[in-house]
Image 1: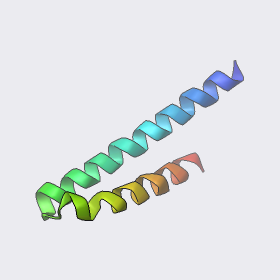
Image 2 (image 1 turned 135 degrees about the horizontal axis):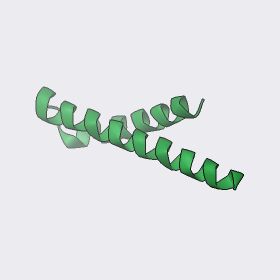
Image 3 (image 1 turned 90 degrees about the vertical axis):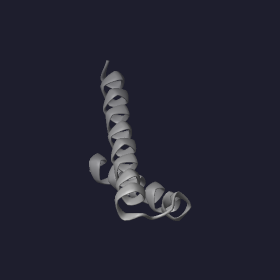
Amino acid sequence: MHWLGRIITFSVIAGSAVLVALLLGHVAHYDIGITRLAIRHSALIASAVIAMLLVV
């Protein structure tokens, strides 16, 4: 059952990173006015960094 806890933890971390990336993308697009194409790579990088920080 120990592996199930790790899978659930990883799922929560990955989901949190995706939600934060979507939130940042929404703010950058609608509030700041940056195009979606310009923020695509930044959002991917930000979600990877957030996921790594949550794992540590």
